[in-house]
Amino acid sequence: MPEEVPRRRGRYNEAARNDRAVLEAAREVFTAQGFDAPVSAVAERAGCGMGSLYRRYPTKEALLQRLCVLAMEQAVEAAETGLRHEDPWSGLAHYVRECVAFGSGALAPLAGTIATSPEMWATSERGSSVIAALVERAHAAGVLRADATRLDIALLIEQFSRRSRTPVADEGAARARLVAIALDGLRAPGAEPLPGDPPDPQAYAARWGPQAG
Image (cartoon, rainbow, N blue to C red):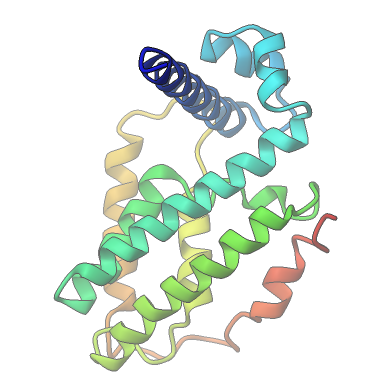
């Protein structure tokens, strides 16, 4: 029996590595080629067979749902790290830069096109709580302009998460410069008031439709 435990652990670790490879490949394929890209392209990029992929994710929708959860989990981790920064502004800036770097908002176009699983909603609610704490701390410290909301920041990250379908030279460097400009625009007090009403969180959430059963 003692020999069986390491064997099971080894199989579990291998399965976890294979799953990460599939998810990373899926994000790269769908980000570069669009969400109409075939699942076979994901399997090819991940270096696995279609049978292996379908054993993990029996449908393309299941794969996309898992990608959404992964993106939200990474955003939550970035927010939690931001909260551990002593300086509220540094923590908020860390969160924005990290989310843009891994493209946490790249899956936003899926809203309304796939069912939202209970895991997606649960992860979203957890993320909302942590990110709200990060933004509220920045507001309380007077470092985030008073008229900037959590949803403003989410939409900003969403815009910066979009990737060009064709390679662009120094795209990462250009994006980093634009993110720095945007962060300066978020700093209190702000040169001019933001135009219009703030985005509606309920309308934003409603894009994803009802929760799947």
